[in-house]
Length: 147
Image (cartoon, rainbow, N blue to C red):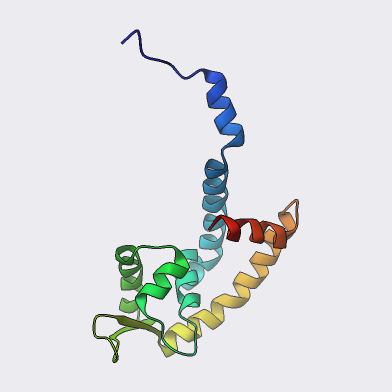
């Protein structure tokens, strides 16, 4: 055991100060908690809001395209859809053209809740952008480039 290499504490400090993954994860958690708080009166989380918004399309998308958009695997997407379907906000149906696929659609209740949540998102998102030390557009472009 004594011949194991140890990572110097200076390396720990360097990783703490410079690790993009660490800082992105921390920022994402903080932002998600803030949006969870503002959506709580509607019984939504920020993840559920994003999922509902991803379904707000002229035609119901297939699960695979929603999973890709949200960077989720299909199993996680299915788990996230279940409470929304139980609440009657989302309808999951077999695709008529390919029975292996599932189409995801907002119900009337889902559209109404999304309409109620959107002004809340707009207000709090604008406040978040004002907190940034750089252009929100530049940050978005950088994040899109990473993903």
